[in-house]
Structures are given as structure tokens and as C-alpha cells.
View (tube, rainbow, N blue to C red):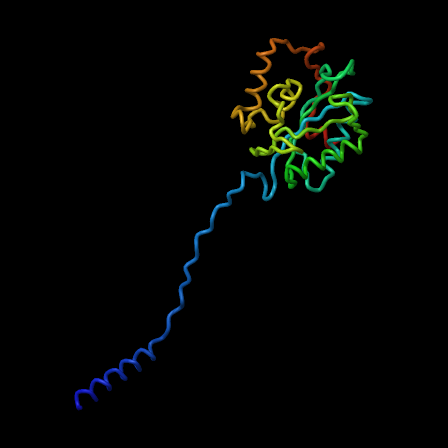
Length: 225
């Protein structure tokens, strides 16, 4: 019995000792932050996109300038750079007037389909009519590239499916984004332009057919409009 009492006293003393021991701060282990799986972006929540512009009705240069103005006026779009304007022979229905073509680089918060809607609204504002496929138009705005994304559905295809075949698109685009990669063909814009130019075997000078530079375009010029 004496041994049992001593054992009980030891247990009680041990519990009292543990109770008096000061408690340390509780350490909470945090999980390491996971990197976003989203594609590469420019500024936070924005993407770099490249648009092709064309006009062959009325004051073509004015329509292109107005389209650029309205794009930049959108709070979700920032104009970064625009190319020179180039005159090219029309493709499509009948004997159409020559086109004036340009390309712009923009930074946008809009997702691809929302950007498409914004471009189409500007086309309507500037009197675009879609009665004839590839027919005359006051303004045409195409999404050529959107970061390195690939989109394919009934409403939108990115990269533009004819981008690598159209010299009148590749020429101005090579001015604003020569090193931008085509996400499917895995070639730069400048490489695609040079390859297509070599395939056609045409020479481009100041006489049509080919390209005729109408007006040099820089962001500084845009600010003056």
C-alpha cells in the first residue's frame, strides 16, 4: 500500500509540473503559394493582342484613324503601337477599290470573345455592312493574335486562320510585332512574312500590285490625331 501511495504522489507532482510550464506560440505551417496556370500576360490581368485593320471605301485613312481612336477610347484597351498604312489590291468580289491596311498592337483586359465584340461594335459605328463576303467595307478589324492563345469555335479563331497566307496582313504586322510567335506554326511574324514573300515571288515597291506605304505610323503620330 505504501508503494502505491508513493506512486500516486509522483504522478500528481508530475502533472503539476507540466501545468506550470509556459506554453509556447503555436506554429502554423503554410502551404507554398501555387503558381497560376494561366498564360503569360503583360500587366496584371491584361493580354497583348494584335489586330489587322483594312478599309477600301470612302476616306480609307480616316476610317483607319477613327478605328484606332475608338479602340483606344475603350477603357479596357490601351493602344501600344500601330504600323504604317499600306495600299494593296483588293481580293474578293468584283472590281473593288484598293485597300488600305494596317496593324496595331494593343494591351487589353478583355477576353478574346469580348474583344471581338468590341471590334465589331466599332465596325458598325463606322458603317461596316456585311452584305457581301469579302466585299467592300468602310473598316474591317480582325484579331490576328492574342498572347500565345489558341481559340477555335464558331465565332472566333485565333490565330487568324489566314494570317500566314496574307502578305497584306503580315507586312504591317511585321512592323509592330516582328518577333511575336505564331502559337501553332511556331514561327515568328517576320519569318512568316519573309517565307510568304519568297513563295509569291513578287517584288514590292511603290507601285501596285504590292505595297505602297501611305503614311508612317508611330504612337507619337497617334497622339496628335
